[in-house]
Length: 289
Image (cartoon, rainbow, N blue to C red; front, side, top):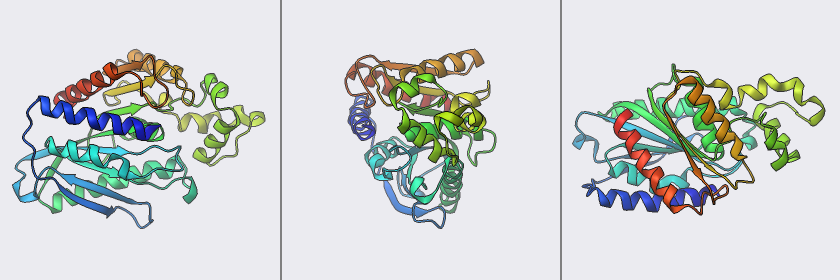
């Protein structure tokens, strides 16, 4: 499903860029840049032009793929990164350690931090100064984007301009999760937290479950946020988006909540909302980057 989200938005962003008559540069791509020693700790980096042709400071955008924290690859965001770089930004799409590497959300957040550090260091070595970075992901990638932004906004190697979470699970204590995923949900939470969680001991592990849920990390200081949720999603309950929207409003956080009334987890049936999403994305880039 999340692959279809990315493919659809890639097509739309190409159209939006053409509307604005953007002068496309010569994107420079660096594949499989290692940010750690593990096989999964690699990312692809896109510059808007040759480093020597980039004047002044630029901003960056990091894309984090979905796949239930157990599948997927950075390549799903390749076209998206190219379009973002053509628009004058540094872009990167990363792989990260997943369940197969015995990674919990702690290691996954560590990988995001390492990737941002490496992106900053690489850019500096190439004579490029990055001012800020935005994060974006869908499904599991949206969860990690939001969780990192809400827990690392003070310590990130680059200031976080804003964060985008599409169909992201944000509250694993939401009772509606049990109605949609059941035992599978418990299995995912167990892998994600590194704790064996079953119905009988669920309440005993609320602290670690909250630690893995972006909803419980919202403060008035978290970065501006864009949320996208499908009303007919059977994987991530729509109530996750509604509740996070309410929490961000309560905390006074600048954010936009987009509802796809006819779509499920793939956000596939609401072209008008998808076009609005791209407008909001460009507005946030102009305001916060």
